[in-house]
Image (cartoon, rainbow, N blue to C red; front, top):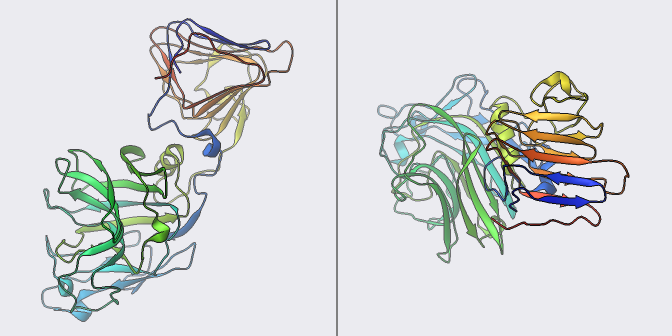
Length: 405
């Protein structure tokens, strides 16, 4: 919706807009209001933190108990050439040979079958890629099966197989200019991909990654790096219908792809597709912590006062991503810099965006429209912009001069 110098009225509520504009936005800060209030870890089913003891043959799942098997090539292959994987207290180091596809010389983790077999799913983690730069088709993870069927940990004889059902994240895919990439594919040959075109995962630096899938008709495949959406595609494929018997960290369901050269700091699976806001909150909390549950905070001063000053809010802190920010006392908050994406409830008060700032709440609800004497106003001046994915005008609210963007 775009509004410039226009007004929306709803039984005494006024939405005013000066020199800025309203617009539909696809920025990473905006997400569907219907699910924005969920905790950022809603639907978390499996969590691997890799703080297992040195020499452990198991990667513990602290949430779902679906422990992974560490496949150590030095115990099944050539110990004179291969290097064993290691836990260093917070990371799992694959210690794989550079650009090698040989099963007997490389290490991976085999997770239990079907642990991501839901229509909606999110897989996220923190990884460091060792490269080398320009190497294609390594896998941070690859869940599915291949023409060889289920492969048991320790089997070194299977060669020449190709993927059939799968979804994966690769630090660099041989497409889109060498992209940090993801894909979902079924045995019938249908596939969709979401990539960060022209940019790979980056060598030697830890990054957060997340892949969300909404399966079935009208579905979507969305890829994130460091909490920000970097690629997206529509899909009708459903993870719940894919055969999931080779659930691998660091290994591909294609025999010709090299093993992952790098480390994992944290790996999580959810049975829901996290929103942009939830992914951003998870990234912000870091690999060792789950993000705080969204709360409701109320503007506590008459103002005008700074939105980004914690003491102006009822809880004493600036609202976090996903929180509900309530204006009910008639006060005025001035937004003059970046803010966290919140669910904004305007009951009685004003939010004034200034200084060329782009303000991106998750949603805005002008409510309650039925309370006499209350006025809710939002303004953007001085080249500022208000961008929102969902605007609710209660009761008999109308808008004038609007256009979709």
